[in-house]
Amino acid sequence: MAPHLLDPGFELTLRPMRYPQFYEMYRAAIRNTWTVEEIDFGIDVNDLRHKLAPADRHLVERLVAFFATGDSIVANNLVLNLYQHVNAPEARMYLSRQLFEEALHVQFYLTLLDAYIPDPARRAEAFAAVENIPSIQAKAAFCFRWMDSIRELQRLETPAQRRAFLLNLICFACCIEGLFFFAAFAYVWFLRSRGLLPGLAAGTNWVFRDESGHMAFAFEVIRTVRAEEPGLFDAGMEREVRAMLHEAVAVEAAFADDVLSGGPLQEGVLGLSPAEMRQYLQYVADLRLAALGLAPEFGARNPFPFLDLQDVQELTNFFERRVSAYQVGIGGEVAFEEAF
Image 1 (cartoon, rainbow, N blue to C red):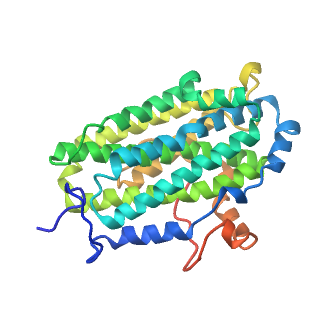
Image 2 (image 1 turned 30 degrees about the vertical axis):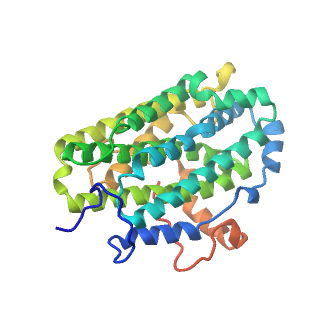
Image 3 (image 1 turned 90 degrees about the horizontal axis):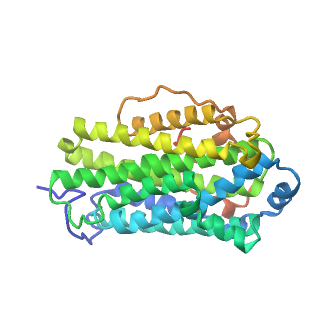
């Protein structure tokens, strides 16, 4: 019998290649190369000083506090839990590239925080947000609980162990990269729709492409395992996935309540409400369920017209940018497969 993707071991040979789709994802990721040095935060700094209302500043401060550690959490899970169990060298090539991209995102947010928060003491507070801001602390706790759920799992010998691994993978793809990060992107593009913080928006566009690739890889791993071992995906696992997404939506909605509260003045953010944000989270959660081949849970629609043009805006700007600012060695079609 041919080996399965989650069989224990450390397969080394790339020929014959069992999973060429992962190798093609690796090649696509290499073409989508960008650097932090291409991003100009000059206009952003002026916007922060002169154009943002206090409620907007609170939104931005909460957002960058989440960014300060979010990608580091994902990178740690990749190293500690994913790399050792996806047993195909071509898949591990992609995971190695993903780890580079997570480091690039960390560099982007480090540079962002240095530009936005020049005071070292306040910057230190942002990096300690997982300890001192309750709404961010709750998100981190959710991530760490799922990361720790397979910390002691050294080999995937039994169906129960493989289900545990898949639930971790689904959590990071659907809930963390696919929900927490996409909510953050929505705040950025809301600000962009008002003509604010173009440097943050430009970097977020590239991070969005990376994260879309990370999710596509995770969903392809899940699809492959499901084809090889369909018995793993039973009704109990589906119930756990739905419960996980409900919790993730609740955690991120609580963060939205904080982000959009307006800070100490409690004025709220003009043009964006917690209720709309909750609806958006439910809409995204249904997209993730669809990617898993599952029926929707919430039946929500996208409440944000400013997101409808996201892919169009990327295509419009494509030929206006330096090639290095978007993609290296471009070949084939430009496609945007990740729906909002």
